[in-house]
Every structure is written in C-alpha cells, then in structure tokens.
Length: 91
Image 1 (cartoon, helix red, strand yellow):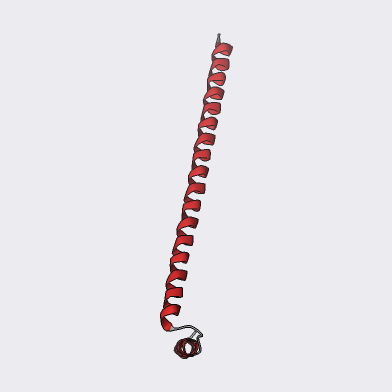
Image 2 (cartoon, rainbow, N blue to C red):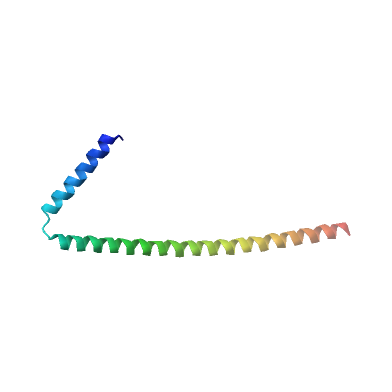
C-alpha cells in the first residue's frame, strides 16, 4: 500500500463522514450522545468479555494444577512401589 492509497482512503473517509453528518436525521448533539453511549457499551462489553476470559483461564489453571498434583502422586506411588519391589528382590 502506498501513500496515494492511504491519502485517498483518508480523504474518502473524511468526505463520507462529513456527508453523513450533513444528511443525518438527528442533531449533532444527539449523534454525539449516541456515539458516546455506543462507546460506553463497547467498553462494558469488552470488560465483561475480559472477566469471562479471566474466570475461564483461572478455572483451567486450577484444573491443570489439580491434574499435575494427581500425576505427581501417581508417580510418587509408582516410584515407591518400584523401590519396594527392588528392595524385595535384593533380599
């Protein structure tokens, strides 16, 4: 993408935004209010999604820790049994 494309895009964006405001059926004050409300709603949605992701991640981490602890116990038992069998074989 070169400078001409970027400049053209920005010029078109500005022109389109200006035309939209000129032909908007509401006053600028109402539009700004709606934009502010939509932005606030977006922030709220992002925060809620972030909390959901955080909670899910915490749950997965806890489950992972439990699985590691279980496997650690299984491995320790296996090592103990192997040691006992080895010591029994030496007697």
